[in-house]
Length: 329
Ligand SMILES: [Zn+2]
Image: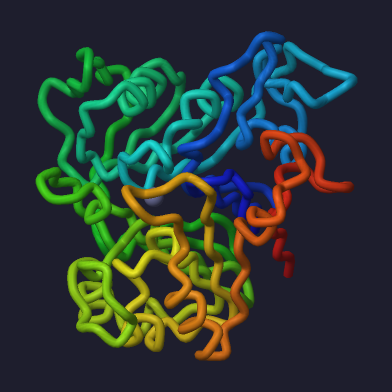
């Protein structure tokens, strides 16, 4: 599995022998809009190009590649999950749809009336052979209105629910632990939470799931973290935890983290402020470390200045920004 350094956002790529899953593809400080070369400046596209191999049209070739090979058949992404409709999680997904053949899209179904979400649904509607999965029941007729109206009548559209297990191969599967497609509160509360069983290891992906207000880990559980502890105390017990909401004090209450009891905590953070704070919060990092958990952070080199321009290209012999993590077993 790869924790990709996308700056201020989240993107996790999980690969099996013959499948892959991309959980989120967004960054609030990516410069992909600035493409004078006609080639991609997206951090996620650059990473996928290196990790999965060249795929798709000229715009799918990273600007940093001196030997571009373009106009190739699109490689497959078996599962793409938008944890919740915030741009730091989905702003780079339109490019992923344009460069890869996405077989299954997982979306809470909560509609965020924004340009980036409109672009994602536009791509969902245009992607041939895609199955669209939401926590809400498909409407009749199967249409979604964001900025524009999108017709999904040519697609398979399924509703998913907590407890659903999706088999990936003989030793790998993922289980849905939180499914809420109803917009109304903060979209963070719509975060799709999945447990992945990957042979000998397990991984918990929580997106921006929270407990509530910004407080110390000793504060009471609430919101999604409370739901997970109350309903799935055994299933959240995993080896690797993607720390909720970029390590914000809204999340990672002690009671939740102790149920998960991970060996490794992954934190994706970047320099752009969320309202008044940059994440992760120091109190959350020190709490996790105090629990004996190994913390891996994508912002480890931010203070020193990430030497890889725009966080794409190659970091020594690895693709991406300064602080990508590849865990293999
Ligand atoms: Zn976020």
